[in-house]
Each structure stands twice: as C-alpha cells, then as structure tokens.
Length: 219
Image 1 (cartoon, rainbow, N blue to C red):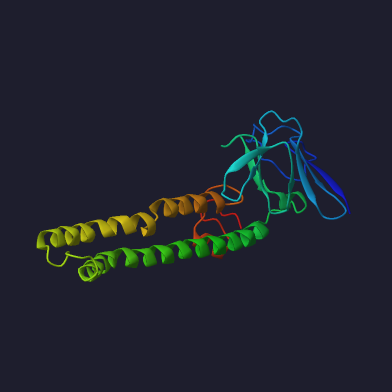
Image 2 (image 1 turned 120 degrees about the horizontal axis):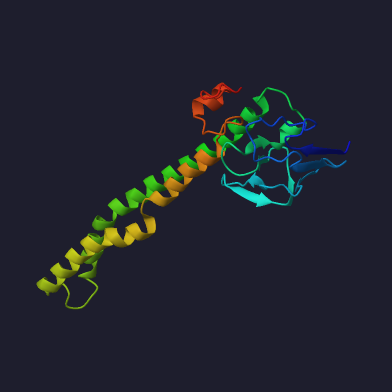
C-alpha cells in the first residue's frame, strides 16, 4: 500500500527528531513509497537541506531522489544541529536499532573483503618488486650472448648491470608498488560508512558484531 511520510521536528513525524537538532525544519522532507515498493525522498524547501550518504560514505545534497529503505539520510547540516537516520525508521519508528546494525554487518563484510583484496594485491606486488633486481641481472647476463661485442666490453657490461639492478626495482615499483593511497582511502571509507545509527560516531568491528554502540549504547 502506498504511503507518504513527512519527516521533521513536528510532532506528527514518524521519525522522532531530538529537540537539540535545531537545524531540522518542522516539516523537513517527505518519503513516499508507491504501490510497487519504490521509495522516493523529497526535500520540502527546508532551511538547511536534505542529504543522503553515498557508497563512499559522503553526504550529498538532494532535492528529490529515489532511495531504498537502507538509505542513510541527514536532515540539516553536519553536526549536532542536524539529524541522521536510516530511511527504514520512517516505517519502523521504534527504539531498537537492530535493523541498522544488521545492515552494518553486511557493510562490514564488504569492507573486509575489499581491504583483504588490497592487502593480497600489495603483498603480490611486493614480491614482484623484490624479484626485479635478480631478474634484471639475469637479463643482463643473457644480453652478453645476444648483443654483439657486449661480452668483451667489461666497462659497458658493468655499467649496464649496475644500472639495471638499481633502476629495475624503481621502474617495477611504479607499476606494482604498494598502493598506500588506496589503503588510506579504504580506511577513510570504513570510518564514514560504519557509523552508529544513533550517535553517528564510527563503530568498531566488535560493536557491529555485538549489535551495540559502545559509545551511546544504542542497540
């Protein structure tokens, strides 16, 4: 059955917005669910805007956008004056955050898989870089029997060998080195995505598996 739910500080809002969230309008946004189960979020000319969290954990301002019940919404600006909630709470406005923590478990699994894939790729690349110098030396030795006159030119042979051993790890490292930037980005993504559904602070793996925030005790 189709539903239209107006969200804000007004008493009729199905989502209870704390009194201290003064950046939220009385009637701030509307969530509509049609007969096919499709969700739509619409900002109702609020003073401080409506935002949704994207796949990287960043909030993007929206005016009208198709969402799902798992979409994380922020009413107003970042900070204590704004209010963050999962769209699911509009149809299940109870005190339990079990649904949100189950969703966090799924997100955590995805984060772990992505981080483990990066670690495996970095470990493989390190092996390639470490093998670069011996391989370069082997190629130099082989070149002595292919390039005319190289074997008999000791000075040139030494210069090429030393240069290859020094430059090979650098050149290979440019293509196969450890991606520190990607590791940092994944860490930041984790901190933004895995946050408590009530207080908004990052939650640990233990908190997620325990289904309770150790900071605000939401569960």
